Image (cartoon, rainbow, N blue to C red; front, top):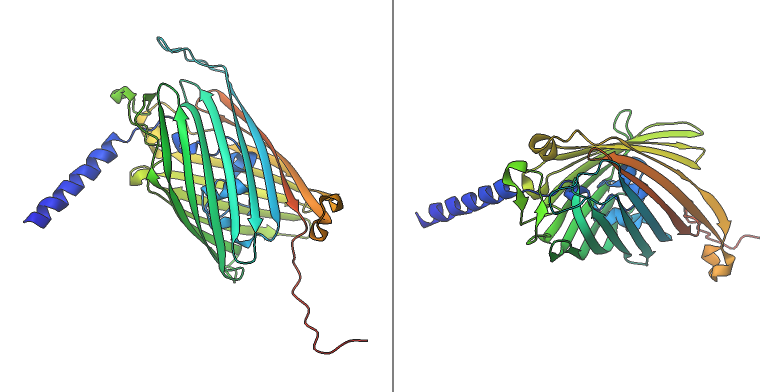
Length: 359
């Protein structure tokens, strides 16, 4: 009888928490607005359509960086323009906001370490995120060469707005790279992650999605205990053009469903075009939000001589500037600009084994 009573109490508590879940608009996308790669479809547990890995990728699956062979530095900034101001009594709406992101990937012999710091300052009434800063520190390991990756993050951050609060916890993730094609699907990948295992932002006043509940005092975002499942693959590949896609399903706090899809094309291994789209079931059901406009992004790859950096392995490196745009929440325009630097060239050739000295 005691076990039944305890089970009933736990079920009641979970149901009550689920019913109370009322994040602000954009709360489940807070980490995507500061990076052009994340904004245009890279916010995925498989690294997006084209497997374009940047330090911020670990926010969506800490295993993604396990295959990186080069040191990677990344810097980006975003401008958020509010074209449809919504002044509320005693709370004027801001016209502009901004965000920034700085990250670094450092591969070592046994583990790949990654760090990324993100700040978003968006004092809007239609996307009531106010001011947030977060740091993610990750470690990823290649368990099976070019086949199975695992990773873990430690994260922490804080919020300031009408009040203040902090968040802290861990993320776990895996990535499986299929060794064979699945029919017409080439180089398929499967990513599974459990994100935000810890304390979410809460305990302050913000406007939630559910209008009938008025002002929400417990933000609870991003959703604590969020499982994320992703599949990605190349659809076609010619000598000069490649087309790929990724799909994600995540379930914040296990009582919302968010679906993401992205499509990417690469031309001559230099120009990358990406588009992404997201469908948030709770936002569509609880408020008069239309689904966000699709995001679009473009990036270009340039080689440069980096001998002056003092390492022979960095004699030739890549710099990849990128730009992305999306309109969210009926008039907030997000423009993100960044650049990624890959120090050195990836080793794509198999090792050469010499059994006897060759003349």
